[in-house]
Length: 91
Image 1 (cartoon, rainbow, N blue to C red):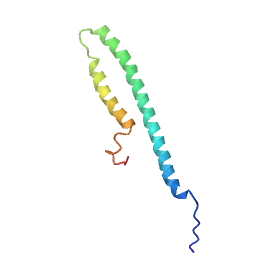
Image 2: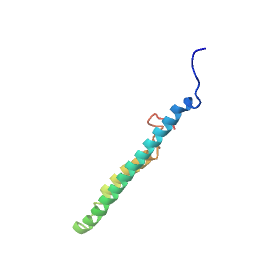
Image 3: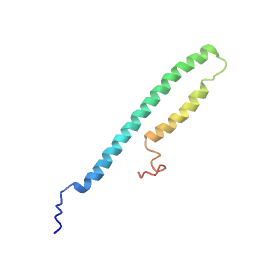
Image 4: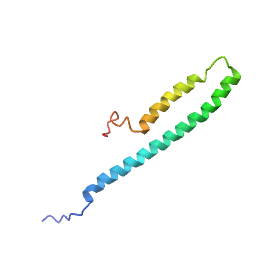
């Protein structure tokens, strides 16, 4: 006898801790994305009227809207976990 006492549920402790950690990370990614999204809309709400007030014939607000919007779309994909396989983390 080796003196090893089997305690039920111990083999699942690592799995449960890993799942809890993954859930924490997912909540953090979603919160960071929400902050990014709110900031994007706040800036766009200012840029569009400034553009139409200062130079109505030149819609330059589209450049930051599309450029930042593209980065925002990538951030959304990251927050949803679509890049987990690409970053070497199994699904």
